[in-house]
Amino acid sequence: IMTWAYVAMWGIDYGPYFLLSALCINYVIFCSPLPSSFLKKEIVDGKVDISKTQIQTLETQALNSLAVLVLPAIFHMGIYHRILFTFDFLTNIMLLMSLSVLFLRITSAYTPIISTLGFPQHNLEMFKLLITGLGATILVGCIEYRLIFRSFYYVILLPPPFNYIIVTALCYTIALLIVL
Image 1 (cartoon, rainbow, N blue to C red):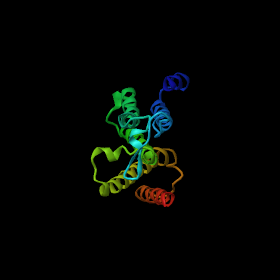
Image 2 (cartoon, rainbow, N blue to C red; image 1 turned 90 degrees about the vertical axis):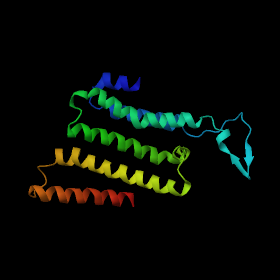
Image 3 (tube, one colour; image 1 turned 45 degrees about the horizontal axis):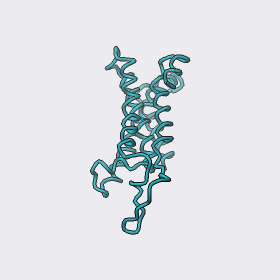
Image 4 (cartoon, helix red, strand yellow; image 1 turned 135 degrees about the horizontal axis):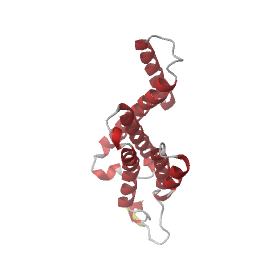
């Protein structure tokens, strides 16, 4: 309903991004591991087993994670289905997917959904680091293409092969400094 109201008020162009933000807000509100006041806590090996005392089931958290990952991209494909294989369209899809992946990675302290997929524990941190690096790289590349090369091309005073190389190196250096 919130996305429909936004689209009715301001237009369809940024509807998938608003849907992503609404889904992220709903994910934080409804998928945080809240303990139940009515279930008894079970102690297993000296630790409290939180999987049996949470209000949300792991299936609900996985379904909401899948909605955050997939629904904005599907919404964008539904809106712009006539220009499905243009570079701008693919950039927007990659931007939506990388934003949702990075959001889910930031909130992964709340929900251990990836660990239920069957990854060994020693590979889990490496997988999370790989997904975070890939998502951040795609995000910086999409922002670089959509914002800098489209909007500020006239400000860069170097000849064409060098301006792309210097701007790309600068964008990824700034992103690396932010991460560190």
